[in-house]
Length: 319
Figure 1 (cartoon, rainbow, N blue to C red):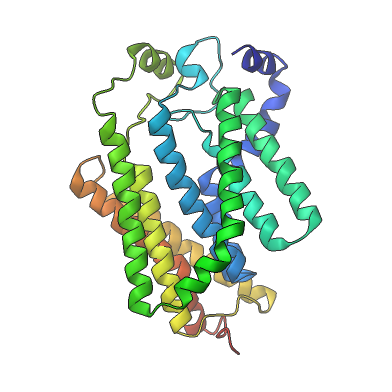
Figure 2: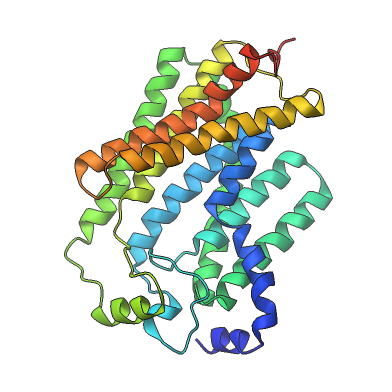
């Protein structure tokens, strides 16, 4: 707490800088950037980042529920909450995503300067969460640690896993992805069920509510979203591969049109279905959430590329 208060007492001049770096760690930022990479520059890098985002989001959601740690502004009104979060604190999702995703980008880029950028950005994203009052130092350190483990695991396991999956039939591949999706849902919901009798301290709720949004740390939304996007993405990757793939290169104006068109539909699926689908923690709303995010993942991986090819905005990968 003393570290957080010391940082916040350095002055408001740091606030826009810290807001900028924390923005680079939001899932919304990654969801806007990854389609641009996948559709317009490098399909392999884009697919890697998308899968890593799903994995790190799912892992983070489960670990938060397991540790049930508060955020600084939940326990002390001396901390100024310069943002607002509803989930538990440890491990920091921003810190974990920063290492795993920016690290995956650097790993794919295979450039020394990319690793330097990734390390600096990951550090600043984690540091920003302290200044903004969203995390304790241990939260950020835990997030970085989990991110490093995921990145190391990816570097070691990607090649053999991809080789094994490619050796399966289409039915075998889809069956594998269904089983993984069910595993994500099962583990996540079991983690929430296991602590169903635990009550959020009333002091945390009151202090957090005064500062902003009331805590809602037991939501199943994150687990359902991760599982849905995973299956949508992976099934889409299987389909686009079977249909000849697509070439993300091309003249600059076609790349711009691809991204704008693709994002219009992406936002339409995300916001449009959100407006008409029911929301909540019950079974039916969670099913509709799964459908919504599954369609989103499938559109990014296969729907948009097939539309680009049909509109002559992109060619097959083998042309």
